[in-house]
Structure formats: structure tokens, C-alpha cells
Length: 492
Length: 89
Image 1 (tube, each protein chain N blue to C red):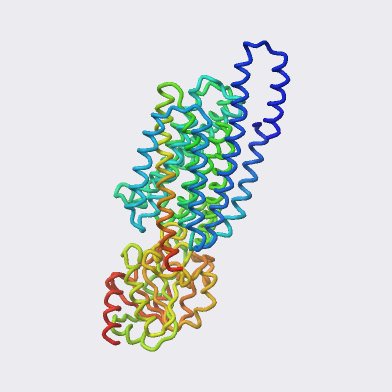
Image 2: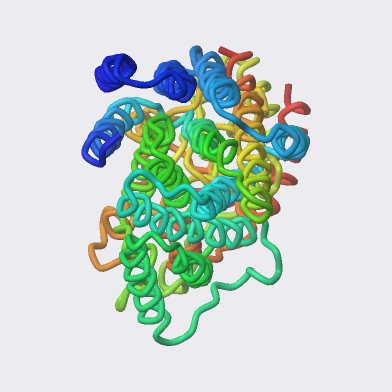
């Protein structure tokens, strides 16, 4: 603000010394500076609304309003831009109409199980939009105020935005389980190629301070390839980390674009998102007990001397039936349901809810234990259960529910494996050693609903299956639950 | 705006982000992600003022389409998810 006022005063002083014919020109300059002050005020309001909006997300009660505040902030930022600047309306109206129609359609039709790939796709769109903005900006004839800063910022926008774009598309493809992306794809020395491309893109970015902008096209081309090569080797189980990271990148790309066009609201909004993605990424890594570099570049090595499946399971597996489980559930007080991704794949969340209703009708307390990496993106399982009308206060986080498993009569595990494997706590040589797990083995009885004894992503046997208090209910997750619900109804 | 001012704003905003986002409960991490994703569509503001010349205008047009997809889709889908949490609260 001070700067603007200074400039105004400066202009006024000048005005007294200027001949009349230049007065008109001066008036224009004055108008521009006042309108840009007004615009910046509008952007400030938008930035405050973004922050208040995210703050609203700290509780389910205030979250809807928070999201609306964020949308209002966006609306104000766009409005301010359109009013304060000379824009080409026809392009904008058509562009916004197309984007709105597409965005509305995607948001309305998406299944909750498909949420991770949709978020990945939106990330990619945000990334490429920033790349295009910086590109279009470089084509302008009037040079930027600070050529060095604008040049380097453009390069960084191109680099981060392009990696976000192709990386997100690959991640979305993997999450959507397109056949082309089914298997992690990699070649020898891929990491060296990636590192080389990154260094090259950074050097070109540095060279962009000459202000010619020619290097930009190469930065973008290299980074598009880099985005593909970085994500293809990463397996499906690690996708939650990857989309959180790409979420962060899309924010950083927007912030970098803010440096290019010298706009505060882009910088603020972009860095908020950058921080948000990084935090989620960190939470996911901790929940898998792996470092970020390990997720991105490492492979999960099977433990050297871990027991073979036969040794662990032989003669100790107790198989059960839906009827037996129904009888077991008669007269219990507290049941904890542990949903894993298998539940989401089987679309079984609604049957789970039905089961819980039946139990609650018998005055049984039902809770859900949610491991941070259940589902395919941070918090995904909570959304799936919320869709099935499960009240959010029954969804318990790992740290909250773990101390209470000892007071649990029956724990029903559906489509989860590694996250309930007690080996993580007992065997320091195991590949999942130290990974935080749900202590279901402490429950009086554990029902594992699973197709077979096949291992989870970590590829190791789970001694819980052979434990005295564990019963295996083999079958498709949804079918097993449907049978269980039918058996319970019969008993009542 | 000089570089240092812009950097100051950037760094402070990152800190604000860390402060509020660590308080978001895991239950809401998916909506947080899609909502913040929509906010990163703020690059739309840049797209609106970027077009100049035919090619520049074309790039700006594409940027507007992609950014609007990001913004509108992101806020709407977040709203859809949050409504599911609210009704039962």
C-alpha cells in the first residue's frame, strides 16, 4: 500500500511540472495504480478466505462452510481480475464455460471409490494450466519488470507443472487400473536418467534469466518426460504417497506462476497447497514406516529370514462359516470393524453398514478402526464409509483405538492384511518392522474375512491368521458379509 | 513487487499452511486434498490475463479451460464428499 501511495504522490508532483498534453497519459497511469491497489485488496480478501476455508476443514461440522469460503475466495479473485484488467472476454467466456461444464460433469458422476484418480487428474490439470500461463506470459511483448526473476520463475513453473501433469496422468491411470499401467514399469539406470533430466531442466531454468524464453520449450519437454519416468516404477500400493506429493507440486507450480506474473494470491494459495500436500505425504510415509526417497526410488525387499507361509500356517488355521460367526456375535458387547482396501474394491461398505445396524439393534457397540493407509489416498476409507451413512464419530483413528482392542469382543477384519500383521512389532528383520499396525490380535476373537491366505503388498505371511483367537472366514468380502447379515437375521 | 517481498509472502504462507493443515483430522484428509487441489487452480487468475497474440491467446485459452476444470470440479466434488459427513453429524 505504501508503495502505491508513494507512487501517487510522486505522480502528483510530476503533474505540476508536466505540459497539458501529457496530462491524459498521466491520468491513465493514475487509474492503473489505483485499480491495481483495489485489485490487490481483492486478492488479499481471497487469500484470507482460502486460509479460513482450509481452517474450516479441521472439523466435519465446519468443513462444508470452509469449502464454500474457499470457493468464494476463488470467485472474488476471478472477479477482481476481470474487473481490474483489460481482458479478452470472448476467450474467457468460452474457456470458463467449457471448464465449468467438464468439471461439473466429472464431479457429479465420479464414484467415491474413484476419488483418488479424480484428484490425481485435477492435480494434473492444475499443473498444466500453470505451465500454459507461464508460456503465454513469455510470449508477451512487454518484458516483465524483473527479467531475471520472471525468467527463472517461468522455468520453475514449467518444470514443476509439467512433472505434475504427466506424473498425475500416470498416477491416475494406475489408480484406475488401466491395463497399460497394471505393472510398475522401469528400466535399468532409470534413476540416473531421471537425475540427468532433472539437472538438465534446472540448468535450462537457470539460463532463462536472459529473458529470451526460448529455453522454456525444452524445460517443458524434458519435464514432461521426467514426470512419466518418475511415476511409472512406483507400485499401486504407494500411490497415496504419490498423489499427496503431486498435490503439493501442483500448488508449488501455481506459486511459481505467481512469481512469474507478480501476483500475491497465486503465491499464497499455491504455497498453502504445497504445504498441505507435503504434510499428507509425510503422514502416509510414516504410516507405512518408509521414507519418502524409499517410496519414490526404492523397492520393498522381502526380509531375508522371515518364516515361510507353510511354517507359519501349517495345521493352525481355523476356518469358519457365516453361521458360526453369527452365533459368535450373539451376546457380545463391543465389535470393532477393520476395513481395508479389499472392502472398497468389493464395494462392500454398504453391507458393512447393514451388519453394523443389525448389531446396534442388539445394543452392541460398533466402531471402525481406520489405518492411515486403508484406501488409496489419505482419508479415503473415511469417505467410503461416510458414503454408506456411517456416522463419523464411529470412525476411530489408529492411535485412539489401539489401546482399546483388549476390551473388544470381536474384531472383524475385511480385506486388510499387512496393517494388522503383529510381525511389525515383534520381528525387527521383517520388511514391515516398525510399521504402525492396528493391534487387532489383542481382541478376544478376530474374524478375518479374506479370499485366501495370500500375502498382502509386503509379501510376507501373517501369523495372526494362525493365532488361537483368529477365525478365517474365506470368501469374497462382499459375499461373506451378505451371508453373515443373512445368518444374523435368521438368528434374531 | 520485489523478489524479497514475494519470497517473504511465500515463506510465511507455507508456515501458515503447515500450522492449519496439521490440525485437520485424518477423517477429512481426502476432502482436504481435493479442496486444496481446487485452491491450486488459482492459476486461473494468471490465465485470465495471460493471452496476447494468436498463439499466446491459444495457450491462455487452454490454461483457462484446464484451470476452470480444476477449480469447479475440485470445489464441487469436495462439497459432495463433505455433505456425506455433515448429514450424519
